[in-house]
Length: 156
Image (cartoon, rainbow, N blue to C red; front, side):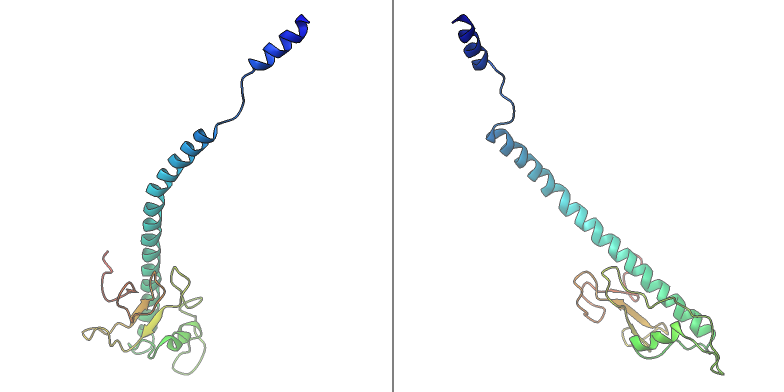
């Protein structure tokens, strides 16, 4: 009889394992607060990095156009995006193939095509072609709005 009593007493004094529902809810609330503070900061840094990456792609394309112009009587490829194909398969004045200026027509950090216009109608006091990206919202606003371009804000 005494052994039965001991097992009942031992069973009543066992330490419970696990967490209560309240403890789990408190931990989830803390994780939620931390995530609410960290995620927006991360997303804004990601957007800034994508804008910088896109500006680099625009500057590289502009340099390729400048190099093309030095070898083609000072003229950048004229037209729009289709004009950029000449940077992939350029020819000299006699029509002989030359080394390409770019491996592929660059895209922005959001995997959208860059827009190109030469002669530049966006800024009148330059011979540079207008090059822009549709930006974070992926909507072409002709270089305005959140579009990233080569005629303003390049110093930022």
